[in-house]
Amino acid sequence: MLFNSIEFAIFLPIVFLLYWFATNKNLKVQNALIVLASYTFYGWWDYRFLSLIIFSSIVDYTIGLLLKKTSVQPKRKLLLLTSIIVNIGFLGFFKYFNFFAESFADAFTLFGRHVEPTRLNIILPVGISFYTFQTLSYTIDVYKKKLEPTKDVMAFFAFVSFFPQLVAGPIERATNLLPQFYKKRKFDFGQATDGMRQILWGLFKKIVIADNAATIVNEIFSNYDTLPGSTLILGAVFFAFQIYGDFSGYSDIAIGTARLFGFNLMRNFAFPYFSRDIAEFWRRWHISLSTWFRDYVYIPLGGSKGSIGMKIRNTFIIFIVSGFWHGANWTFIVWGGLNALYFLPLLLAKRNRKNTDNPAEGRILPTFREFIGILSTFGLTVLAWIFFRAESLVHALDYINRIFSASFFEAPKSIQWDLVPALVVFIIVEWAQRGKQHALELTGVKISKPFRWAIYYAIIIAIIYFRGEPQEFIYFQF
Image (cartoon, rainbow, N blue to C red; front, side):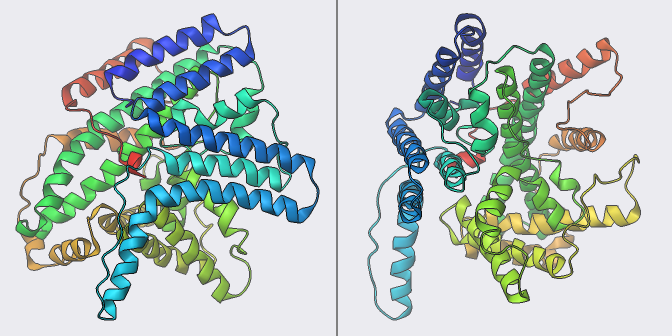
């Protein structure tokens, strides 16, 4: 079920009314409703994959209880290993089996032998990369004794399957989300209205910016060999806004929807394209995944401590693993490695924590130095996104090679310029609200009621005007 579909527009009010008016007197029944709604939401794509979520939930719930009962370290390690094998095993089988089979066959080809790879005709379950990491955070934290295992099976199943963030995040930590299922929720009108505003801005990002940019990007990347370099660079820039509008739009809708039900999810994007260096970008982009890898992979490896060699090793591991998490294609691995190369000089020079405040703090416009930093960081990010979007390494390298050709100075072709004014408004609004949790947060903003409603109606009109055929969110494929 898509957030930007008619089905969800019907589904959400029904669940909302049942949640607050029919089940609000009993916490367990309310949590049971969340589980039922979440399974309905997920099963809308393919009900068969519900068995994976249910099985993963049973395994990790049981392992959590068993970890509590034993203090024998070898047994605890075995239990943790079981959880890792089950969750990563599912992920590896559905997402990476064909990739490894084909890579294995290609390796033999290098030595002059042809091996026909064994491929499986399997569908990737939507959201499997997200909910497997979410359940792993639970067992790892219980193992490390950072979290008490729950005995409330309904609360745990609701935590694993919570429908607003089930298929594309944010990837919640058990320490943050699970305790919220233990407490009775009370309807908060202010929280709900702010959630509605965040949903509205998320829909604007998705429908107006991402979906319309996708039309341009698909046309350019599909016909790149017939287009000048000037058009190709615009195609890469539009893709940068497509993936940001698409993914952060999903996160805004997920976070806003959760607030309607009295839950607070972690922030997933913090206006990343205003970053002044690549380290700041990764503190602002897909925060839930970046911090997951930091806490469960990077720091256990030694983090930024130790020798220069260890720092370099850990940096490449974290970025390449992050790239591989995104998909079973060498393009994602190169994308991760390229970001590691961007990040490494800042780490070695101990400048990776330089920009931790908001850009142009207390000012309307950035300084010249900040502007150059934002522009150069965005340029590096756009270059890396080409690998992310390309079908293959050959496609990406050829695309980049054509950008830096004499045709770069030709007039762009095949561009639908009607999106540009909306994109300019989008950037201005996000810049003005860069210190907020989301672009339509009105905390501390003095604005008259008529003007506020005029903004809402303007956004709704833009959504209706630019709306085309609903498209799946990009991160559903991950």
